[in-house]
Length: 584
Image 1 (cartoon, one colour):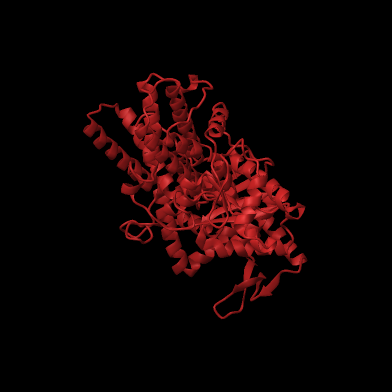
Image 2 (cartoon, one colour):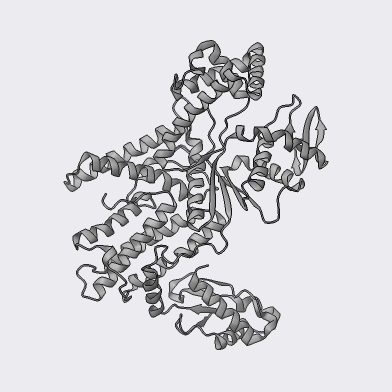
């Protein structure tokens, strides 16, 4: 709720008590943004909800509330509409004062969290010895945006990359490489990542088809767990090689992460099993140690257990996730732990969260959140794949986006008969291409699947990153044309006279409410919607109101509106991980 809405809510609560007595203290005035601007800016619907309790007509209740309501500093006189809606329209002088106040604030009026917390965002999480593919795109982009918003709000955020760097696959890969390419196990960067992936696939085929190879691979895992020097050295080389390739992607996307893979928690797994045993939750089932869960059944309707130790003594993902959860609560002292993964893992999170709660490992002040997301689909509506049926490499997808942006820019420059340096063209193409991919993802409700289309995401006219980058560049075009330095405008009074100025002003003042809702609901598309609407409102203002040609003091007032819009776009886009451009 933004500051204005909060003030109105408090005054409405006072008016309800003044009109109907202290028994109604704390009643929600049901204050919402007006659905239609012609009715005002806000609407209080409390009269309808109180009708039965008070035994009065809603319109009469609304009248009694309005009689006691003092919002004269903020609003025009309240109006009652329909069966009892209380409509509130903000005063122009109030809006001007609010804009004048935020001009000097680098946070643009967005307050930091009153009680900052240690929050963990677990995102990206690729597997060692495999290339990052399109399936890692959403976790990486959504997780980064959530982390940025929480950091901006003042929370102490730990960005964790829970990479798959342990387990059977390493025994399998090391065994295979000992046979076909032993140099890769002793020499850094002896293979490139593509070759490593090819060897991994061949190792998996051998593992599935050859019982002797399978047993040797399992023994190699035992040697790894025991810390055998040659196996450990080989494992470290393989991890480092993958890590370097991941970093190329993270640099392209401007992602900051702390790697803490599955291997980090390996020494803690036995303790997890022992503590679950002590709590009486463990049940042996066909040689495996399990915890039976409430609300989960198999196809036959029988209770479904979560296995924490396999019959051969090995552990699985659930055991590692339980160990990491305990570590994050006990050692990292996290108060909210956010896991950003595809929606297909929903059951897994529900299950191990339930086990942790049953074991009493989750304090009352710790919140666990699974942030699920849908699939990236091709334009045929199916999972996006290469022609050979493989997952699209994330590096290829990003390079292709930049290439498309480069071609689009070249075409536009030719049409405009503009000459630009190759350096300028390459930089704009990089920013636009990467931003387009990020925004196309973040602008969707994350729980939905979405269709990946370079043409749509690079469109200068739709709800896209290029559209907003263009609005930002347009504002800086005004500053260049008028030889204006926005930073030297100082604190100049904003005067709102035209309807498009008023619409833009009201929207600029909603930033705090939008960021607060994303902080709570972890839905970055809400911020995207806001920035798109803001860009549209600015364009309407730009089309209808002269700026550089306006007389003073209107000229400076409109330049301040331009500056506030540019700063709001830059801040909002930065929270999505998107860089801005002053020229395109």
